[in-house]
Image (tube, rainbow over all chains, first blue to last red; front, side):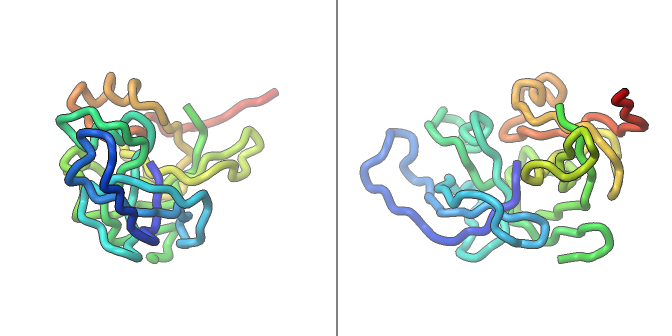
Length: 92
Length: 89
């Protein structure tokens, strides 16, 4: 699981069955200081995150488990909207 | 599993139900030399680790389901140990 920032949305009308009704958001992995630290990618949104929000995501097969009950072909899912990251004495 | 340093905590009110009541720790994986190596990991705490602790993190879903249970849902990383010492002769 990792921190990320929502940087955009992705609309796909034609997609695999089971993915209907799920928002697709473009996220960029970030570190504790909010600096980008990975490749932007598309994730299923399971928490109604908005643009610019700091979120945390789960990858691989567990991402599909965020979209129960159907087993959907996703490998990244937003599973939480981060209120605060408190790091070594400096809340950010 | 990986050696990691607990950097701090992640607080999220709005989250998937599987994370309800679970403490989230932000961990920085370390190389054998103790220096940061690799991307930071958000992990569910299972051992009451604190900021600055040297810990073991499990980052594989099947292991998580064996510890948390089949209803673990979308959890993939757990803090499973607090390391006292690493000896690399």
